[in-house]
Image (tube, rainbow, N blue to C red; front, side, top):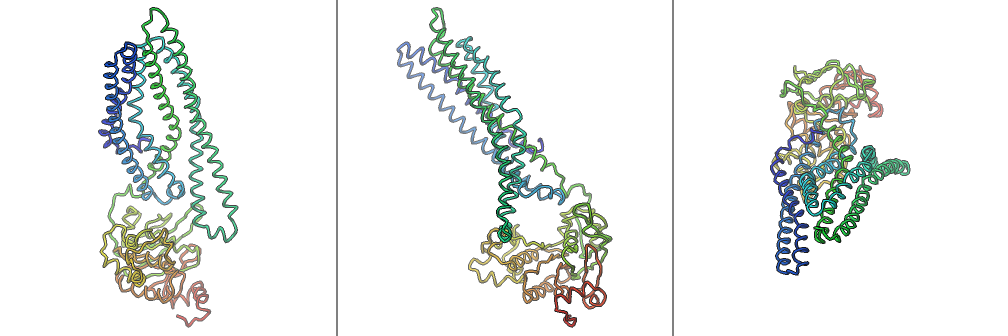
Length: 574
């Protein structure tokens, strides 16, 4: 849990100041019953209105100071809490970005969303209430008890006798609450993941008439979550009424005992004293209830802290490397490279090849042949299970993944377009000029689209590029990749949504813009592959042939079969 609160020393001074203000505020609150006693005994009972006015003015001043101290303290605490919330959420987000792919896959998107929003909010909320609790509760309990004893030891004794009973009631109510919140949080993660999957695949769900099946999944997760949350909340909410019942019984006994004492001939107890003791009972009750509410949040707080600590304790994929900077000339050497996603079987095995600097190379093969897997390995998004990948003569496994990725500009198989202005989706770091953006869009065959829009580069893109066609989204991603100056460019099936004329124009511009750079094009189109300097043919996770288009038609049956299937059997279409 300590990992969550690393780097919080900067909050020490403001929170200490807030702590002192809370103590002063509590002292002002504790002083009010004593002043009220004097108003009743010395003013009202004695008929001294001047004293009543003076004492009431003093009470008003004390109340005003209480308000001032409370407002300033709350402002400081809330500001520190919000800053801590922002810092913790940023740490969670950065940790997610730096996780190794295998570790990241153990968390669903719903689980990461719940941790970064719900868990972080609750942790900051509970920790933000600590200065007030630590300052007010001890002062209220100690000062209230001492002042109650000054008025009447017997009445104060009744209050003290009931305090352990209240603590026992709180313990009984909170016992075993933690396990219910653990289940509830797990089901919230599951529910978020189900709803997200349902929304993203709503068209497929409707096409296959699976609405009821998907609804049943959500209902089961919701039912389990609601049962756990109801049980946890029932136990937590019992604290307040059970504590109030015990303390109200104590109040009744104090009033009954006070009435008996005040009628005694030699008593020192006054009506104002009884009022003061009852006020102190209220204060102590408020303090105990505050502690009860805090204890009620602890089981869920522990669950939230455990989940965040688990996330923040995950290894960083860029740690543990002696060498940090990787220089690449564009050449890539693969030596017996293999990879397994699950550890059971190899999705890629025995791949050995040489890609020279400045070459344009195509990866071609059927679905599941291992083309995209090899592209991810070259980009440093995955680590080979076996074998070695070299950039030049440097083994990339000796360098952190961020150094490997700095050498490659990558366009994913699934296009990712950010919502917001087009120029922000292209240039998230805002380190490119408008001329550079327009140049990249022109080479990416999207310049005409920008010119047609009144907003130009400020054209608003909706979430996931909902107002763009598939081809437009691919061209945005390609234009974004062209803005990065790298020795190697990987296009993972990035032309699949483009018509042949647009692709032809795009390839011509890429050849001109990326002259001298290494290009790797993952494709299933022979028309795309045949223009490349070299073609690597994959089948069932293995590299089965390397060569040019004309040579492969003669030597590789699979490549010939792919060619015939796309050209209608015309071998002259070369």
